[in-house]
Length: 298
Ligand SMILES: NC(=O)c1ccc[n+]([C@@H]2O[C@H](COP(=O)([O-])OP(=O)(O)OC[C@H]3O[C@@H](n4cnc5c(N)ncnc54)[C@H](OP(=O)(O)O)[C@@H]3O)[C@@H](O)[C@H]2O)c1
Image 1 (cartoon, rainbow, N blue to C red):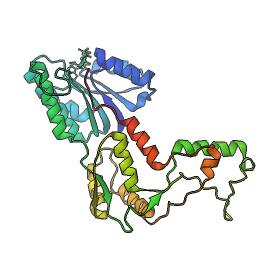
Image 2: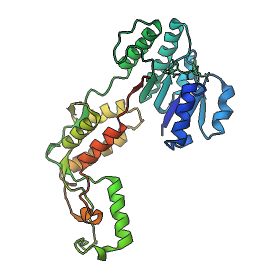
Image 3: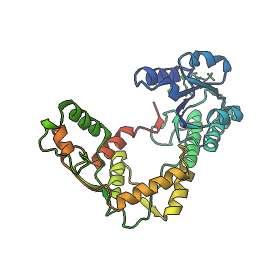
Image 4: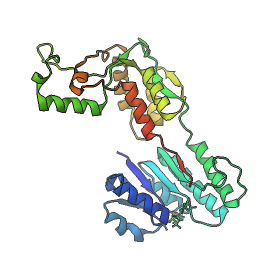
């Protein structure tokens, strides 16, 4: 499994605060974070906090390729090197190593002269613009959401997703109060099934639109032949999921298109005492929550 975060610049003022808040305010487990420094001498101070440690020196590409292996999110704190030419080389090393090792997302700490634009003439800022352009070229935002071309089409097959939070809430209520507290919830068939679903069955197209709404994007769906879809997804998966994972996912998606997951039952609404969120509402909420600025500018 890839490690969730690799953080650079932690021995500096900004990085130290980022790390302290990730651990103490956001309660991210220390084992999910790899701390780095140019100096091996900093290993003990990070490992004593339960963090992993790797040496990463922007001037030594070999250390970067070794450090970035199997990492999902890279916090790339810009170098404190004052010579812009040297700093550009260092930053190129970081971006090339991140690309070569399959880092999923790079969060670059830039400088803010020029605001959202590229108009500042300050030399330092020009160097930061160059890094931003390189990142844009090497780590473009998704251009399309890939889906397999299936029959029946995914606009027809629907799924009555319920969120995990509301499923947990419903199950706990059922355990705590018992079925007798909910006379309308009748276990069905000889298997005594209580079916907990969302309040509406929605298509994969509805769910991708919800993700776009939550992220404020309009990324289009691109349909591929199933085999091509498996290959394209496995090639592009920075998280390391392989073909086998997508082969299983194809069976899951085919089940949805066949209508296997479209049954809606009111039991969850009864247990919650309110209408549960639909899958699309939950996806939109989660996508909005995870949408943060992809670069820090202060
Ligand atoms: N301070 C701010 O408010 C602020 C605001 C916006 C942006 N920034 C930018 O953020 C960066 C860090 O700011 P800071 O105030 O925290 O700086 P700082 O206290 O001087 O710390 C510099 C950090 O950068 C790391 N570093 C420097 N050269 C490196 C290299 N060649 N390879 C790997 N790591 C290297 C150092 O790590 P090791 O020595 O452990 O290797 C150290 O942790 C600066 O570039 C600054 O422009 C800062």
